[in-house]
Amino acid sequence: MHEINVSVVSAEEASYGVAELWSDGRLIGFTQFDDGDLMLRIEPRDDGAAVVIGAHGLADALAEANRLLASY
Image (cartoon, rainbow, N blue to C red):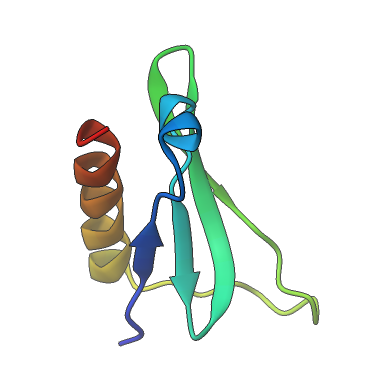
């Protein structure tokens, strides 16, 4: 399983709900608030291949994103 690292780069970004999700040194997606709901946008791969993310790793990453955003 590939680990997903989560980062929030600033208080301003956190106010928009932006948390970056990284795996293998590559940005795979980010969160953002939309009508008060935390949404996930998954970025396409540069080579056009499918983005494959483990369900448990994604669930853990989203929980971490929520935790980090709440800390701002």
